[in-house]
Image 1 (cartoon, rainbow, N blue to C red):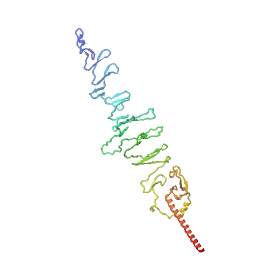
Image 2: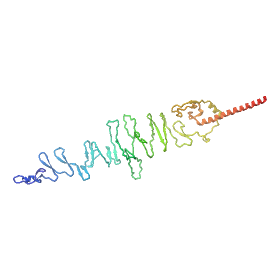
Image 3: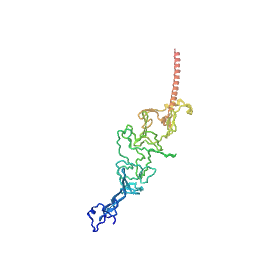
Image 4: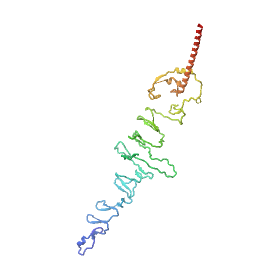
Length: 417
């Protein structure tokens, strides 16, 4: 017999147990019993279950017929903490929906195959790896997983940081929803590091299929805050803003909003640069160097490539051909008609309200340059001088004739007397 419950002493020759023997607390025990053993009814007799190892848990066997010691989990407490430890070489799993895909092999490892709710503070002193891949020794926290939207909304979001902050009365310096402030220490190995950055946004990779995407952006800012004396969708306190891309910086969207740029003075004032609502499509290229005093930007070829130019008047700037004839100039002026007119919308001076008086380019080629389209200020000044000279010559000729007539009249009067 092994483990059965029985009388623990030799009975008398008549096979009877005295009252004292029956009531003795040390005389009824399990066969081969040891300290810590427990008894249970196996359906036919009262039998012994040998004691388990330290900190093991008593549970029902898989057949639900008898108790047994569960050695896959141990509990211990040293007065300051309670330790739950799995079986050596095995990981601990809560739930049975899946098995490890990350090679969990230690009694220190824990897997939750369902949802996990933590209503408190969670501390992650090691790597966070939300990825089907094994942890990488060069990435601290890794969030990388394939996700298929369930279609419960018009949005599909891979990572959402939501909630709210109620500021304290002492939070007068700043209230920040999310801050990235990670110092970087280089290896001190005399190497050249191509890039150090606090935030890196990779280009959005889109598998478009047969769909149509209206707007795609690697970084999208919905708008500026609704409150604040000074509001901005993006605010840079200090440092240069460098756009290294060869692609253009676009302000505004055709059909939606006209591009506008404000440049503010450090003390006061705002200079606003914008384009017409019907802006046209063209490229303006600036000169390679600064211009001289009094020069202005000129598009000499009409192709958007500008250069510095000026109606220079010094003789050293000119190849002199011949002296102009004042009479030719005044004849050209007198043969030219002048009109009252308004400029058409987005044409000329862009001032459609003012009534101008001037000539037409096709009727005054002498007053134009740049393929006869633009008023030539040099010619207008030159022809004005020549016109005055021709007029002065005519006045002098008339004056001479008047003087001679006056002299003849004087002689005639004297002869009559």
